[in-house]
Length: 486
Image 1 (cartoon, rainbow, N blue to C red):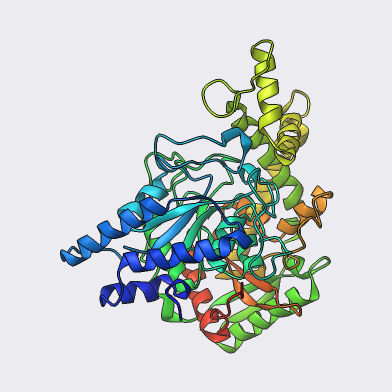
Image 2 (cartoon, rainbow, N blue to C red):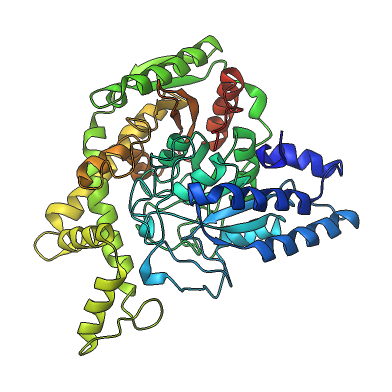
Protein backbone atom coordinates (compact mmCIF):
# COMPACT_ATOMS: atom_id res chain seq x y z
CA UNK A 1 0.00 0.00 0.00
CA UNK A 2 1.29 3.47 -0.96
CA UNK A 3 1.64 6.19 1.69
CA UNK A 4 -1.09 8.26 0.03
CA UNK A 5 -3.56 5.37 0.40
CA UNK A 6 -3.24 5.22 4.17
CA UNK A 7 -5.63 6.78 6.66
CA UNK A 8 -4.68 9.49 9.17
CA UNK A 9 -4.54 7.03 12.08
CA UNK A 10 -2.31 4.65 10.08
CA UNK A 11 0.05 7.50 9.16
CA UNK A 12 0.02 8.70 12.78
CA UNK A 13 1.27 5.28 13.90
CA UNK A 14 4.02 5.26 11.24
CA UNK A 15 5.15 8.72 12.33
CA UNK A 16 5.11 7.75 16.02
CA UNK A 17 7.32 4.75 15.31
CA UNK A 18 9.58 6.94 13.12
CA UNK A 19 9.04 4.63 10.12
CA UNK A 20 8.37 7.64 7.88
CA UNK A 21 8.77 11.40 8.12
CA UNK A 22 6.11 14.00 7.55
CA UNK A 23 8.14 15.20 4.57
CA UNK A 24 7.94 11.70 3.04
CA UNK A 25 4.14 11.74 3.38
CA UNK A 26 3.79 15.25 1.97
CA UNK A 27 6.00 14.38 -1.01
CA UNK A 28 3.89 11.25 -1.66
CA UNK A 29 0.73 13.38 -1.71
CA UNK A 30 2.21 16.11 -3.88
CA UNK A 31 3.34 13.46 -6.38
CA UNK A 32 -0.13 11.92 -6.28
CA UNK A 33 -1.76 15.31 -6.92
CA UNK A 34 0.55 15.93 -9.90
CA UNK A 35 -0.33 12.46 -11.26
CA UNK A 36 -4.13 12.45 -10.96
CA UNK A 37 -5.46 15.97 -10.38
CA UNK A 38 -5.38 16.77 -14.08
CA UNK A 39 -8.20 14.21 -14.36
CA UNK A 40 -10.05 14.97 -11.10
CA UNK A 41 -9.50 18.76 -10.91
CA UNK A 42 -10.10 18.97 -7.15
CA UNK A 43 -7.51 21.68 -6.37
CA UNK A 44 -7.79 25.35 -7.26
CA UNK A 45 -4.63 26.37 -5.32
CA UNK A 46 -1.67 24.12 -4.47
CA UNK A 47 0.66 25.15 -1.61
CA UNK A 48 3.62 22.94 -2.54
CA UNK A 49 6.44 25.07 -1.13
CA UNK A 50 4.56 25.91 2.08
CA UNK A 51 3.57 22.26 2.64
CA UNK A 52 7.15 21.01 2.39
CA UNK A 53 8.36 23.75 4.74
CA UNK A 54 5.62 22.92 7.29
CA UNK A 55 6.53 19.22 7.07
CA UNK A 56 10.19 19.96 7.78
CA UNK A 57 9.20 22.01 10.83
CA UNK A 58 7.04 19.18 12.23
CA UNK A 59 9.82 16.63 11.59
CA UNK A 60 12.30 18.85 13.43
CA UNK A 61 9.96 19.06 16.44
CA UNK A 62 9.53 15.28 16.45
CA UNK A 63 13.32 14.74 16.33
CA UNK A 64 13.71 17.20 19.20
CA UNK A 65 11.35 15.07 21.28
CA UNK A 66 8.47 17.55 21.44
CA UNK A 67 5.08 16.09 22.35
CA UNK A 68 2.91 16.35 19.24
CA UNK A 69 -0.80 15.80 18.60
CA UNK A 70 -2.40 12.87 16.77
CA UNK A 71 -2.59 14.77 13.46
CA UNK A 72 0.86 16.39 13.53
CA UNK A 73 2.53 15.98 10.14
CA UNK A 74 -0.65 14.83 8.37
CA UNK A 75 -1.38 16.56 5.01
CA UNK A 76 -4.89 17.96 4.50
CA UNK A 77 -6.69 20.51 2.33
CA UNK A 78 -9.47 23.06 2.79
CA UNK A 79 -12.54 24.02 0.81
CA UNK A 80 -11.92 27.35 -0.89
CA UNK A 81 -14.45 29.26 1.23
CA UNK A 82 -12.41 28.79 4.43
CA UNK A 83 -10.13 31.80 4.88
CA UNK A 84 -6.38 31.20 4.95
CA UNK A 85 -4.02 34.08 5.69
CA UNK A 86 -1.69 34.65 2.75
CA UNK A 87 -3.33 31.94 0.60
CA UNK A 88 -6.02 32.77 -1.98
CA UNK A 89 -9.62 32.11 -0.93
CA UNK A 90 -11.82 32.48 -4.01
CA UNK A 91 -15.09 30.66 -3.21
CA UNK A 92 -14.65 29.42 -6.82
CA UNK A 93 -16.07 32.76 -7.97
CA UNK A 94 -14.86 35.42 -10.38
CA UNK A 95 -15.95 37.89 -7.69
CA UNK A 96 -13.08 36.76 -5.41
CA UNK A 97 -10.68 35.33 -8.00
CA UNK A 98 -7.70 37.24 -6.53
CA UNK A 99 -8.76 37.60 -2.87
CA UNK A 100 -6.04 36.82 -0.31
CA UNK A 101 -7.46 37.01 3.25
CA UNK A 102 -5.57 38.98 5.91
CA UNK A 103 -6.50 36.35 8.55
CA UNK A 104 -7.21 32.64 8.89
CA UNK A 105 -10.46 30.94 9.89
CA UNK A 106 -10.55 29.49 13.41
CA UNK A 107 -10.59 25.90 12.04
CA UNK A 108 -7.53 26.64 9.88
CA UNK A 109 -5.71 28.01 12.93
CA UNK A 110 -6.69 24.99 15.04
CA UNK A 111 -5.43 22.54 12.42
CA UNK A 112 -2.21 24.52 12.00
CA UNK A 113 -1.68 24.47 15.77
CA UNK A 114 -2.29 20.68 15.70
CA UNK A 115 0.62 20.40 13.23
CA UNK A 116 -1.37 19.43 10.11
CA UNK A 117 0.09 20.35 6.72
CA UNK A 118 -1.97 22.48 4.30
CA UNK A 119 -1.65 21.05 0.77
CA UNK A 120 -3.97 23.61 -0.81
CA UNK A 121 -7.50 24.87 -1.42
CA UNK A 122 -10.25 22.86 -3.07
CA UNK A 123 -12.84 23.48 -5.75
CA UNK A 124 -16.51 24.01 -4.92
CA UNK A 125 -19.76 25.32 -6.30
CA UNK A 126 -19.51 29.12 -6.40
CA UNK A 127 -20.18 30.54 -2.92
CA UNK A 128 -21.25 26.99 -1.91
CA UNK A 129 -24.42 27.23 -4.01
CA UNK A 130 -24.91 23.94 -5.81
CA UNK A 131 -25.02 20.16 -5.57
CA UNK A 132 -22.54 19.13 -8.27
CA UNK A 133 -19.48 21.48 -8.29
CA UNK A 134 -20.50 22.41 -11.84
CA UNK A 135 -21.18 26.00 -10.70
CA UNK A 136 -17.48 26.73 -10.13
CA UNK A 137 -15.97 29.66 -12.03
CA UNK A 138 -12.60 27.81 -12.05
CA UNK A 139 -13.25 24.26 -13.31
CA UNK A 140 -15.57 21.27 -13.09
CA UNK A 141 -14.36 18.66 -10.59
CA UNK A 142 -14.89 15.03 -11.65
CA UNK A 143 -15.95 12.04 -9.56
CA UNK A 144 -12.91 9.74 -9.07
CA UNK A 145 -15.15 6.66 -9.36
CA UNK A 146 -16.36 7.72 -12.81
CA UNK A 147 -14.87 10.81 -14.46
CA UNK A 148 -18.06 11.41 -16.45
CA UNK A 149 -20.02 11.93 -13.22
CA UNK A 150 -20.23 14.78 -10.71
CA UNK A 151 -18.54 14.51 -7.32
CA UNK A 152 -21.55 16.13 -5.64
CA UNK A 153 -21.49 19.58 -4.13
CA UNK A 154 -20.92 22.13 -2.99
CA UNK A 155 -17.85 20.53 -1.32
CA UNK A 156 -17.15 18.43 -4.42
CA UNK A 157 -13.44 19.20 -4.47
CA UNK A 158 -13.13 18.26 -0.79
CA UNK A 159 -14.82 14.87 -1.31
CA UNK A 160 -13.05 14.09 -4.59
CA UNK A 161 -9.62 14.89 -3.08
CA UNK A 162 -10.14 12.34 -0.28
CA UNK A 163 -11.59 9.71 -2.64
CA UNK A 164 -8.72 10.14 -5.11
CA UNK A 165 -6.10 10.01 -2.30
CA UNK A 166 -5.07 13.62 -2.95
CA UNK A 167 -5.38 14.52 0.75
CA UNK A 168 -5.56 12.46 3.94
CA UNK A 169 -8.59 14.49 5.01
CA UNK A 170 -10.28 17.74 4.04
CA UNK A 171 -12.69 20.28 5.47
CA UNK A 172 -15.85 21.35 3.68
CA UNK A 173 -18.92 23.36 4.59
CA UNK A 174 -22.49 22.08 4.79
CA UNK A 175 -25.47 24.42 4.37
CA UNK A 176 -28.02 21.95 3.02
CA UNK A 177 -25.97 18.78 2.56
CA UNK A 178 -22.78 20.13 0.99
CA UNK A 179 -20.49 17.77 2.95
CA UNK A 180 -22.68 14.67 3.19
CA UNK A 181 -24.00 14.60 -0.38
CA UNK A 182 -20.51 14.73 -2.01
CA UNK A 183 -19.29 12.20 0.60
CA UNK A 184 -22.10 9.92 -0.64
CA UNK A 185 -21.21 10.53 -4.31
CA UNK A 186 -17.47 9.93 -3.77
CA UNK A 187 -17.61 7.06 -1.27
CA UNK A 188 -15.97 8.80 1.70
CA UNK A 189 -17.05 9.72 5.24
CA UNK A 190 -18.47 13.22 5.68
CA UNK A 191 -19.89 14.87 8.79
CA UNK A 192 -21.98 17.96 9.42
CA UNK A 193 -21.54 18.72 13.13
CA UNK A 194 -24.25 20.30 15.30
CA UNK A 195 -24.82 23.94 14.37
CA UNK A 196 -22.54 25.95 16.66
CA UNK A 197 -20.20 23.06 17.57
CA UNK A 198 -17.49 24.09 15.08
CA UNK A 199 -16.60 27.76 14.70
CA UNK A 200 -17.74 29.52 11.51
CA UNK A 201 -15.33 32.41 12.03
CA UNK A 202 -13.47 32.80 8.74
CA UNK A 203 -15.98 30.78 6.71
CA UNK A 204 -17.24 32.95 3.85
CA UNK A 205 -20.95 33.24 4.60
CA UNK A 206 -23.68 31.79 2.38
CA UNK A 207 -26.63 31.28 4.79
CA UNK A 208 -25.49 32.11 8.30
CA UNK A 209 -28.17 30.21 10.22
CA UNK A 210 -27.46 27.00 8.26
CA UNK A 211 -23.72 26.98 7.36
CA UNK A 212 -21.51 24.55 9.25
CA UNK A 213 -17.88 23.47 8.72
CA UNK A 214 -17.12 19.75 8.92
CA UNK A 215 -14.57 17.09 7.86
CA UNK A 216 -14.38 14.57 5.01
CA UNK A 217 -12.20 11.56 5.80
CA UNK A 218 -11.20 8.10 4.59
CA UNK A 219 -12.79 6.31 7.54
CA UNK A 220 -14.73 6.88 10.76
CA UNK A 221 -11.71 6.75 13.10
CA UNK A 222 -10.13 9.58 11.08
CA UNK A 223 -13.40 11.50 11.43
CA UNK A 224 -13.18 11.22 15.23
CA UNK A 225 -9.55 12.42 15.19
CA UNK A 226 -10.31 15.47 13.04
CA UNK A 227 -13.47 16.34 15.01
CA UNK A 228 -11.37 16.35 18.20
CA UNK A 229 -9.18 19.07 16.70
CA UNK A 230 -11.77 21.41 15.17
CA UNK A 231 -14.66 21.23 17.66
CA UNK A 232 -15.08 23.71 20.51
CA UNK A 233 -16.36 27.10 21.59
CA UNK A 234 -14.97 30.17 19.83
CA UNK A 235 -15.57 33.70 21.21
CA UNK A 236 -15.13 35.06 17.67
CA UNK A 237 -18.30 33.25 16.54
CA UNK A 238 -21.46 34.51 18.26
CA UNK A 239 -23.33 31.30 17.36
CA UNK A 240 -20.64 29.03 18.85
CA UNK A 241 -21.99 26.74 21.61
CA UNK A 242 -20.14 27.27 24.94
CA UNK A 243 -20.33 23.66 26.15
CA UNK A 244 -17.89 20.88 26.92
CA UNK A 245 -17.04 18.42 24.14
CA UNK A 246 -15.90 14.80 24.59
CA UNK A 247 -12.93 12.94 23.10
CA UNK A 248 -14.64 11.35 20.10
CA UNK A 249 -12.10 8.52 19.82
CA UNK A 250 -12.79 7.29 23.36
CA UNK A 251 -16.05 5.37 22.83
CA UNK A 252 -15.69 4.33 19.18
CA UNK A 253 -15.50 0.63 20.09
CA UNK A 254 -18.63 0.47 22.26
CA UNK A 255 -20.85 -0.97 19.51
CA UNK A 256 -24.58 -0.50 18.90
CA UNK A 257 -26.12 -3.10 21.22
CA UNK A 258 -29.30 -1.65 22.72
CA UNK A 259 -29.24 1.50 20.55
CA UNK A 260 -32.67 2.52 19.27
CA UNK A 261 -32.55 3.54 15.61
CA UNK A 262 -35.47 5.12 13.73
CA UNK A 263 -36.18 4.61 10.02
CA UNK A 264 -38.35 7.51 8.82
CA UNK A 265 -40.73 6.28 6.12
CA UNK A 266 -40.66 9.62 4.25
CA UNK A 267 -36.97 9.04 3.38
CA UNK A 268 -37.68 5.72 1.68
CA UNK A 269 -40.55 6.73 -0.60
CA UNK A 270 -40.96 8.05 -4.12
CA UNK A 271 -37.78 9.21 -5.88
CA UNK A 272 -35.36 7.01 -3.92
CA UNK A 273 -33.38 4.81 -6.31
CA UNK A 274 -34.00 1.06 -5.65
CA UNK A 275 -30.23 0.35 -5.33
CA UNK A 276 -29.85 3.17 -2.79
CA UNK A 277 -32.85 1.96 -0.80
CA UNK A 278 -31.62 -1.65 -0.82
CA UNK A 279 -28.15 -0.67 0.47
CA UNK A 280 -29.55 1.49 3.28
CA UNK A 281 -31.99 -1.24 4.32
CA UNK A 282 -29.14 -3.78 4.25
CA UNK A 283 -27.20 -1.46 6.60
CA UNK A 284 -30.27 -1.34 8.86
CA UNK A 285 -30.44 -5.17 8.93
CA UNK A 286 -26.73 -5.29 9.72
CA UNK A 287 -27.21 -2.91 12.67
CA UNK A 288 -30.10 -5.05 13.88
CA UNK A 289 -27.93 -8.18 13.74
CA UNK A 290 -25.37 -6.32 15.89
CA UNK A 291 -27.94 -5.68 18.62
CA UNK A 292 -29.53 -2.36 17.64
CA UNK A 293 -33.32 -1.95 17.82
CA UNK A 294 -34.78 -0.60 14.56
CA UNK A 295 -38.29 0.79 14.19
CA UNK A 296 -40.13 2.72 11.51
CA UNK A 297 -41.26 6.27 12.34
CA UNK A 298 -42.93 9.13 10.49
CA UNK A 299 -41.59 12.66 9.92
CA UNK A 300 -44.47 14.19 7.90
CA UNK A 301 -43.02 17.73 7.87
CA UNK A 302 -40.13 16.44 5.70
CA UNK A 303 -42.09 17.31 2.54
CA UNK A 304 -41.88 21.02 3.43
CA UNK A 305 -38.13 21.05 4.19
CA UNK A 306 -36.88 21.73 0.66
CA UNK A 307 -39.04 24.82 -0.09
CA UNK A 308 -38.41 26.17 3.43
CA UNK A 309 -34.66 25.66 2.99
CA UNK A 310 -34.46 27.42 -0.38
CA UNK A 311 -36.40 30.40 0.94
CA UNK A 312 -34.35 30.75 4.13
CA UNK A 313 -30.95 30.10 2.54
CA UNK A 314 -31.61 32.35 -0.46
CA UNK A 315 -32.86 35.17 1.77
CA UNK A 316 -29.73 34.95 3.91
CA UNK A 317 -27.52 34.72 0.80
CA UNK A 318 -29.17 37.85 -0.60
CA UNK A 319 -28.19 39.68 2.58
CA UNK A 320 -24.68 38.17 2.95
CA UNK A 321 -23.65 38.69 -0.67
CA UNK A 322 -24.63 42.36 -0.66
CA UNK A 323 -21.09 43.08 0.57
CA UNK A 324 -19.68 42.26 -2.89
CA UNK A 325 -20.15 45.66 -4.48
CA UNK A 326 -16.76 46.41 -6.06
CA UNK A 327 -15.83 49.00 -3.44
CA UNK A 328 -13.63 47.46 -0.72
CA UNK A 329 -12.35 44.11 -2.07
CA UNK A 330 -12.95 41.53 -4.76
CA UNK A 331 -13.78 42.22 -8.38
CA UNK A 332 -14.51 45.76 -9.57
CA UNK A 333 -16.07 46.38 -12.97
CA UNK A 334 -13.90 48.54 -15.22
CA UNK A 335 -16.75 50.31 -17.03
CA UNK A 336 -19.42 52.13 -14.97
CA UNK A 337 -21.20 55.49 -14.90
CA UNK A 338 -21.81 56.10 -11.19
CA UNK A 339 -21.88 54.27 -7.84
CA UNK A 340 -25.14 52.41 -8.52
CA UNK A 341 -23.90 51.35 -11.93
CA UNK A 342 -20.64 50.14 -10.31
CA UNK A 343 -22.67 47.86 -8.04
CA UNK A 344 -24.75 46.58 -10.93
CA UNK A 345 -21.87 45.96 -13.36
CA UNK A 346 -19.62 44.38 -10.71
CA UNK A 347 -22.30 41.92 -9.60
CA UNK A 348 -23.31 41.14 -13.16
CA UNK A 349 -19.71 40.30 -14.10
CA UNK A 350 -18.68 38.70 -10.80
CA UNK A 351 -21.53 36.31 -9.99
CA UNK A 352 -22.48 33.16 -11.89
CA UNK A 353 -25.98 32.11 -12.95
CA UNK A 354 -26.85 30.02 -9.87
CA UNK A 355 -25.67 32.68 -7.43
CA UNK A 356 -27.73 35.33 -9.24
CA UNK A 357 -30.76 33.03 -9.23
CA UNK A 358 -30.59 32.59 -5.45
CA UNK A 359 -29.90 36.26 -4.74
CA UNK A 360 -32.99 37.22 -6.76
CA UNK A 361 -35.15 34.60 -5.05
CA UNK A 362 -33.91 35.71 -1.62
CA UNK A 363 -34.34 39.42 -2.32
CA UNK A 364 -37.90 38.77 -3.48
CA UNK A 365 -38.68 36.70 -0.35
CA UNK A 366 -37.44 39.54 1.88
CA UNK A 367 -39.10 42.37 -0.03
CA UNK A 368 -41.92 44.51 1.32
CA UNK A 369 -45.26 42.71 1.15
CA UNK A 370 -43.70 39.26 0.69
CA UNK A 371 -41.62 38.86 3.88
CA UNK A 372 -44.51 37.44 5.94
CA UNK A 373 -45.78 35.24 3.12
CA UNK A 374 -42.42 33.66 2.34
CA UNK A 375 -39.46 34.16 4.70
CA UNK A 376 -41.47 34.30 7.94
CA UNK A 377 -43.59 31.32 6.89
CA UNK A 378 -40.45 29.33 6.05
CA UNK A 379 -39.03 30.07 9.51
CA UNK A 380 -42.27 28.85 11.11
CA UNK A 381 -42.01 25.61 9.09
CA UNK A 382 -38.41 25.34 10.29
CA UNK A 383 -39.63 25.33 13.91
CA UNK A 384 -42.15 22.57 13.13
CA UNK A 385 -39.44 20.44 11.47
CA UNK A 386 -37.10 20.98 14.45
CA UNK A 387 -39.86 19.99 16.90
CA UNK A 388 -40.62 16.86 14.90
CA UNK A 389 -36.99 15.71 15.12
CA UNK A 390 -36.93 16.46 18.86
CA UNK A 391 -40.01 14.27 19.37
CA UNK A 392 -38.29 11.34 17.60
CA UNK A 393 -35.13 11.80 19.67
CA UNK A 394 -37.24 11.62 22.82
CA UNK A 395 -37.46 7.86 22.08
CA UNK A 396 -34.60 7.03 19.69
CA UNK A 397 -30.82 7.42 19.80
CA UNK A 398 -30.32 7.78 16.04
CA UNK A 399 -32.14 8.15 12.73
CA UNK A 400 -30.92 6.19 9.70
CA UNK A 401 -31.68 7.40 6.14
CA UNK A 402 -30.22 7.45 2.63
CA UNK A 403 -27.83 10.40 2.17
CA UNK A 404 -29.20 11.19 -1.30
CA UNK A 405 -31.98 9.73 -3.48
CA UNK A 406 -29.66 8.58 -6.29
CA UNK A 407 -25.97 7.96 -6.90
CA UNK A 408 -23.78 10.55 -8.67
CA UNK A 409 -25.40 11.79 -11.87
CA UNK A 410 -23.65 12.60 -15.14
CA UNK A 411 -21.92 15.95 -15.63
CA UNK A 412 -24.38 18.27 -17.40
CA UNK A 413 -27.36 16.01 -16.74
CA UNK A 414 -29.22 18.42 -14.43
CA UNK A 415 -27.72 21.83 -15.26
CA UNK A 416 -30.77 22.90 -17.28
CA UNK A 417 -33.20 21.87 -14.53
CA UNK A 418 -32.34 23.59 -11.22
CA UNK A 419 -35.39 22.13 -9.45
CA UNK A 420 -34.25 18.59 -10.27
CA UNK A 421 -30.77 19.51 -9.02
CA UNK A 422 -32.25 20.86 -5.75
CA UNK A 423 -34.09 17.55 -5.22
CA UNK A 424 -30.75 15.78 -4.79
CA UNK A 425 -30.50 17.45 -1.35
CA UNK A 426 -33.89 16.19 -0.17
CA UNK A 427 -32.43 13.79 2.43
CA UNK A 428 -29.88 16.24 3.85
CA UNK A 429 -31.68 19.61 3.95
CA UNK A 430 -34.02 18.84 6.90
CA UNK A 431 -31.02 18.18 9.16
CA UNK A 432 -29.53 21.64 8.49
CA UNK A 433 -32.91 23.25 9.10
CA UNK A 434 -33.02 21.57 12.52
CA UNK A 435 -29.33 22.30 13.27
CA UNK A 436 -28.60 18.63 14.02
CA UNK A 437 -25.41 16.57 13.52
CA UNK A 438 -25.35 13.99 10.72
CA UNK A 439 -22.79 11.76 9.04
CA UNK A 440 -22.68 10.05 5.66
CA UNK A 441 -20.57 6.91 5.32
CA UNK A 442 -20.14 4.42 2.47
CA UNK A 443 -22.76 1.67 2.68
CA UNK A 444 -22.04 -0.14 -0.56
CA UNK A 445 -22.14 0.25 -4.34
CA UNK A 446 -24.93 0.31 -6.91
CA UNK A 447 -25.05 -2.01 -9.92
CA UNK A 448 -22.80 0.32 -11.94
CA UNK A 449 -20.12 0.44 -9.22
CA UNK A 450 -20.94 3.92 -7.89
CA UNK A 451 -20.78 4.44 -4.11
CA UNK A 452 -23.91 4.81 -1.97
CA UNK A 453 -23.91 6.66 1.36
CA UNK A 454 -25.97 5.91 4.45
CA UNK A 455 -26.77 8.78 6.79
CA UNK A 456 -26.87 8.75 10.59
CA UNK A 457 -28.61 11.64 12.37
CA UNK A 458 -28.58 12.38 16.12
CA UNK A 459 -29.97 14.98 18.49
CA UNK A 460 -28.00 18.22 18.97
CA UNK A 461 -24.45 17.51 20.23
CA UNK A 462 -24.99 13.79 19.63
CA UNK A 463 -21.89 13.35 17.45
CA UNK A 464 -20.47 10.74 19.84
CA UNK A 465 -23.41 8.36 19.26
CA UNK A 466 -23.19 8.85 15.48
CA UNK A 467 -19.47 8.05 15.38
CA UNK A 468 -19.97 5.02 17.62
CA UNK A 469 -22.67 3.54 15.34
CA UNK A 470 -20.86 4.47 12.12
CA UNK A 471 -17.61 2.90 13.33
CA UNK A 472 -19.40 -0.33 14.30
CA UNK A 473 -21.15 -0.52 10.91
CA UNK A 474 -17.92 0.27 9.04
CA UNK A 475 -16.15 -2.64 10.78
CA UNK A 476 -18.96 -4.99 9.74
CA UNK A 477 -19.25 -3.83 6.12
CA UNK A 478 -15.49 -3.93 5.42
CA UNK A 479 -15.72 -1.84 2.23
CA UNK A 480 -13.54 1.14 3.21
CA UNK A 481 -10.51 -0.43 1.52
CA UNK A 482 -12.19 -0.20 -1.90
CA UNK A 483 -10.78 2.82 -3.74
CA UNK A 484 -11.40 4.20 -7.23
CA UNK A 485 -8.88 3.27 -9.92
CA UNK A 486 -7.66 6.42 -11.66
